Image (cartoon, rainbow, N blue to C red):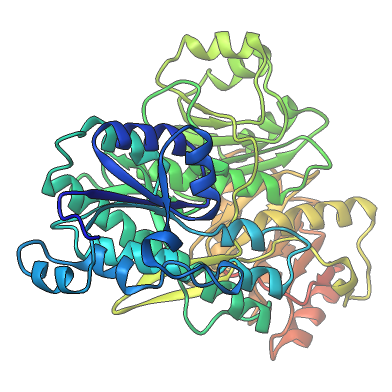
Length: 515
């Protein structure tokens, strides 16, 4: 028989964290507990009086649990407007449900398993859960909806009087975000099964704010750091500084370029990348990480002032003190020795980051006027099978090692990009010029300013040379080998220029524009 004075709390969760404790708090606050399957068992085993949904609706769970809450008795109790729908609820024997606690089948965790089949994934598509969340969120003027165990404490604090409208609205917003993200995960995954190498026809991305930033690129712009919903923040996004001021928007952009850059150089040797305004002003490998840092710094010590430094090996005290001889904003390293931490502690404003993993994404997004551009992330790894020596002279072993290094480095530089390198270190970087010949000239000028000779160095270009003028400029400065994608209508003209000057040239068959 309907009892209009009863307050029902419906609890049906996949994540049972804190469920028993919440159930007890609700029971003590005067709620009657209504539940399904495994959730009902957890509550019952905690010594709580629980009513099964099938008993409440008078209809059994069927189809292996696929149909259990899709009932007018449930949804009428959730959606009924107090003071407006009371008569029809009484006519049909529907009792009000004032609280809905639901979280959804673990679809994302299921499809992340390497052995997940399509059938496994389909069975983890929740139907009743999203329907109840949306119903409760829609009727949040009267009903409280909770979809995250992290909100249990806030709910319990507001018992027995119950949450106010503002809190119910905040929870409703979270519930709609939760179901939207859930459906997005499903549609995205199913689209990828059709063609894993293609971008989906609809791109769904749900982001949770990890933290607010002081401002964006400029003080008048609001900014925040977000992570993908349903995943722990990884890589730089999940890394808290060991010391230093909070990271700014620009710090994070540059730190990302540095961390990606040092990974692009590979893990075969100690490496260092120094970034300024997302461009490398120096990059090098060495026998030690200290040597790599010194050689990266030598490329452009002026621009390195106030830069972001990333290394791929542990930093010791000696290296820390060498780094602190000039102003730096951020250091990114896998680990630091105690001696290094002590040295950096003397400069408390320097931010120190030690990411434990790489959180790189398979796709990249950028806003344009009225829309978004989405692309697969660029893979900077060199495909050795695609390398083709196109000149009369082939590079020797040292030149080939430098060409491989220069190719990794040039992919980090804004287009048009030219990198001069020698002994696996950059000695001149030309970034973001409107013509490739200007980038080549600018890189040579930077080398001259740093007191570095280009004689015997190699040159890398992120895209093909449209004319032979860059080769002529390189020959004048003693460049001995060139690596570039190839593919220009004037490739033969460029090859002929290399042959004339005895320069070896290698085509990669792939360009690396970075706009």
